[in-house]
Image (cartoon, rainbow, N blue to C red; front, side, top):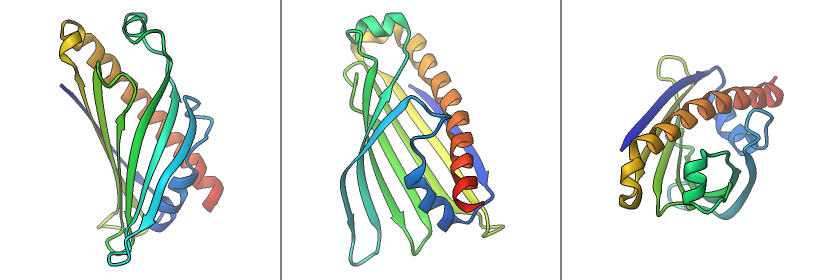
Length: 171
């Protein structure tokens, strides 16, 4: 299993970042995300937490060996569940791959919280756990390293794209 972690500080209030999150895609920095579909959304009447479940469709360029293992499919799907807690000012999103999950499991958690040292900023934390299945354990190192690098690249592009969205919406 491989672990990817990243952090970032957005120079926007948590309320702005959590509102802009819904307009993050599409953006020019992340052309691999081709569709986002809301499957369910509701507010817990006791806590005020907004829970949303979405299906994310991506077009991935993957290495030839992995492409052959998964039958040449380059369109992939992930399930994302987000919870926005307006009282505690926490936005947490957890996603997992639905495609190729018999070969590899990718679980990503993203959290946006108020910066305790400056409430006009928002802290971003991203973690991804990548684990190959037993059927491809011989190639696990190669495949897990590929996905770690993909997370590094996409994380940088995603932050830049989200900064552009925030600038456009709040600027």
